[in-house]
Length: 371
Length: 187
Image 1 (cartoon, rainbow over the protein chains, first blue to last red):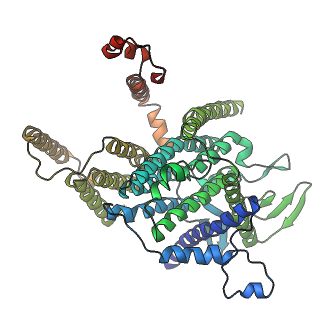
Image 2 (tube, rainbow over the protein chains, first blue to last red):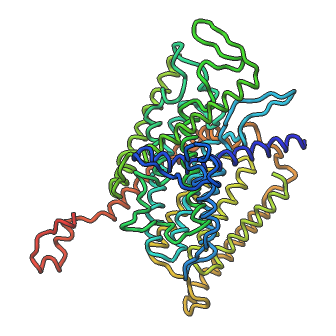
């Protein structure tokens, strides 16, 4: 009994630590990556007693982004503007971060691990309606941004909050339609079952990943997910020349850091959802529970624990690749205008998503009739 | 669901519902209502109505309340004054209606079956999306289709009301008197 509780607690802690750490590392990714893209050097000033540089190592900016920046943010004065709603002003950043973090509870980050007589599923919470749970938590994530803008008692912040809210609830529909077509394809709401269904290969070389079945839903989830995380090219809630910094104009210090953390956690969330729905989650091509089965009948046996660890590593690599893709897009594309953003959401994604759902339904009916 | 969890959630729901009516700032009222709706969603999930619980969270807490927030912002509602004068007739009607609601609840609960004969364990698959869909698209198919047509009519009506018709503006008395053509910005 106690051991079961302990296992559940460890799984929950692993998920939270993984997400928060990855969100922190993404800050480094973002600053050095953008420097790389723009042919700059990027963060390279801060160093602890110059130790690494004395022995000739290049300064990669780890101290800058992972230690100095957070320390600076959390020791800054936490300023609450006059006339602001103090309670909601303090609550809003956490109201934004919390739903994103709890979404990761249902994400399967690996297959089962057998230790002794115990079978542990590598998933913090085995929820059978996981897809609905994800939609619910994403829907509730709107309040942090909306209330942050409202509680600041600042017109720019309020306008930024209104914009962010309108954008998020518009793209939630596209996101939901993309998830619905995936749910229809696999006939389940359970993410672990979806990952199991994506194991194996077609014709000996093509992994049975969701992207082969639902390429349009993949593009929709990527676009809508990036719009949900409110980053370039969808960063309309902020804009220096019109709205200053949008809904977090009046935030400083730790609370602003929490809003920033939310952005990065949302990038990780989008990457994780894409990985689970379209790239097999923890599946590695040709890897089964007893080892590799390459085409041509070559079998390469592996112990069960090693297979689980390989799956975990594959999941992390896929997630990081899609985080990197989002950062790459952010530093490559210019931003939309607000009317273009709304047109893409309502006149592009929604009809496309509905058509995708209808086509998926027809194919499912035809395929089931053939048997 | 254990009785302790249920009492905790029920108390939270009642307290936040009281907050919805007792607070003066409309945004605070709305937040309290969101807490009430989410708590009820959790109670649904705890009572094995999983799909209904998640739909409650998605539709009510995630979508409808956000629209309420927009309305509060757009109408620029301010915090109401305490002991506002007037509205005596409204208060009287509200009192009568709440008394009626309380009486109705009392009658229903009086005739409710006792817990002794109730099913302790839900049947397998109860509350799952599959069972919900089967019921919805067999026993309640007609009601479901009528509801969807009703919603479609409401959407069409909302668009028809919100749309500005150039010809209607052209015959407006002020513009007709000024003898100006329909301005292009209207379209």
